[in-house]
Each structure stands twice: as C-alpha cells, then as structure tokens.
Image (cartoon, rainbow, N blue to C red; front, side):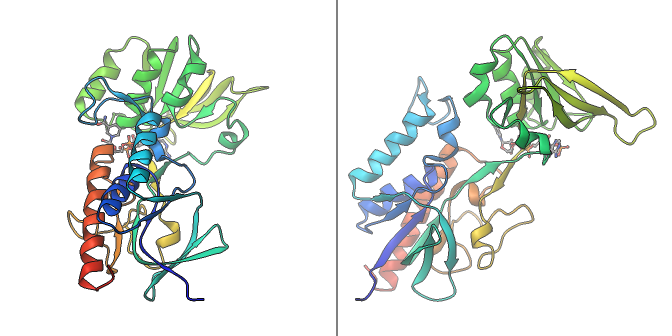
Length: 315
Ligand code: NDP
C-alpha cells in the first residue's frame, strides 16, 4: 500500500511549532506535529510569562503552552509524541524518521526544534545533575530559598536568573568570565543595584564539590594572569546561564547553519534553501529568542507552506 504523504509536518512544540500548527490546521493542511524531547519547549520551564501581548497579568508558561496545544488540536492538528532522529531532504516527498524506526513522508516540513541550555562541560555538572546544578532558575529556584547560589554568565539570561534568584536566596554570586557584563543596560543596573547579588568579574568555575550534593564551587580569578587566584566558594546551588545551543544537528547535512548551529533562512523569512522546508522560532533566531517572535515566524512558515502546496497542486 502506498504511504500517505503528510501535507505539512511540524517538528517541535514551542510557540513557533504550535502557532504554525494553528495556522496550518485552519488552512486545511491537516498538519501533523511531533512534540520532540521537551513537549511545550522552553516556556514550560519558565515561571510566569509576562511579555506576551494579550496577558496583562501574565500567564504561567506551562499553562500558555497547554493552551497553544489545545488551540492547535481544536482545529485538527494531529499532535504526536516522538523525536526526529534523521531526515532525507534530498528528494521529494521529504522523509523524516521518528525515534529511529518510523518513516514519515511530507510535502512541507516546518522545523521548530528550538534551542537548549548550554553547560560549561565540566564533569561535575553531570555528577551533581539534579543535586544542585540547574540551567533554569525559574524551575529550580524554589529549592534555594534562604540559601546561597552562584549563577554563571554575563548576558541577559544570567542577569535575569540572578535577579530572580535574589528574590529567593540569601545570597547570589554572579560568576562572569569577562571584566564586564554583556547584558542590556536595564538588566545590568538591576543586578548592580541588588544588594543580595555580588558580581565576581573575571572569574571561571573549574569544578564543584560536596558530599551529597553541591556544597561549593572551585573558582579561578584572572586565569592565566600574574595575579591568578584559585579558591573555593561555599554555595548550595550552581546555575548555568551561558546561552543556548540550537537543536539543529539532525538537519545539518541538508540545511545551512551558522557557526553556532542556527539554521540560516532568507532574511525576515522562515524559508530555507530547500523549497517547502521552513525553519521557525529559536532554531533560526540568534537575536530575539522571544515567544512572540517565535510565534510570528511559525505563522509565516505555515502561510508559506500553504502557498507552496497550492503552487505545486498538492492541496
Ligand atoms: P548570551 O550569549 O547573550 O550571553 C552568554 C553569557 O554567557 C556571556 O556573558 C558569555 O560570556 C557567557 N559564557 C558563554 N560561555 C561561557 C563559558 N564557557 N564560561 C563562562 N561564561 C560563558 O546569552 P543569553 O542567554 O544571556 O542571551 C541570548 C539572547 O537572548 C541575547 O540576545 C539576549 O539579549 C536575549 N535575552 C533577552 C532577555 C530579555 O530581554 N528579557 C532575557 C534573556 C535573553 P562572554 O560575554 O565572555 O562571551
């Protein structure tokens, strides 16, 4: 029996994926969406989402994603569980393999696999995973009420996480490898004015220690300089906020990426160099990385997919 070809296959379930699903479903593209490793994406680990227009009092990140999923399903999106393990974009229809065993064929594919938090690559990050190491302050900050924590990074994420944690913890060290913060002025000011936050400029973490969980961090100040200083700092929690890695590995043999791994698309468009294949949301956005911009690019991708299907008489 001939395998059915999906008109619009959406990979990923963050704001980009679900917005494209809502638009594709309402345009009768019968979209099929695969949720991926983290159903709902990064927002499910956010506390309250305060900057998405239309929610004057904010909305819980998990609730927001549940609502998006329900909205996509209401219009007929088939939401499936599974992770894309390989693709063949070399011939039409495009082939996408789920969990290494199930092959799907699709006329159009919207890639919205997002980005994942980066780690320093220390052995101790693995050793103490779930025992004092976290890459999400809003998810795990609660466990550090009145405790001492360190946040690594000097960008907006690090400043945001440090400020958030300062509302819970008794003390927050911000470990910054450069002699300055690269965050936006408003976030810098917020951190520098907060009495609970101490910024450790020109510091790197080299390891962690503790018997049954993190009890401290090994630090080096001004590494490689004549006044280089190694010392230990007692902490209860170690938070990473050093950026994100786009989840694009599986697509790299067919699509162009930048040096970090973000999929390169046409300017201001989710179009990739392969007709019918689109990249929406954080997977192709090193600049904005906002729920609202991701949703907007998901909308564009669905509209482009519809036009492609119409032009090729596939609708
Ligand atoms: P960034 O890439 O902006 O910053 C990463 C930070 O981590 C930098 O200070 C960098 O140091 C540091 N870093 C990276 N690797 C290491 C390492 N191995 N060891 C120590 N430090 C390291 O990432 P963000 O996640 O902060 O932000 C990404 C984008 O999202 C930005 O455009 C940001 O403006 C935006 N954003 C906006 C927010 C808002 O507006 N509310 C909130 C969060 C993010 P160095 O400076 O030395 O490279």
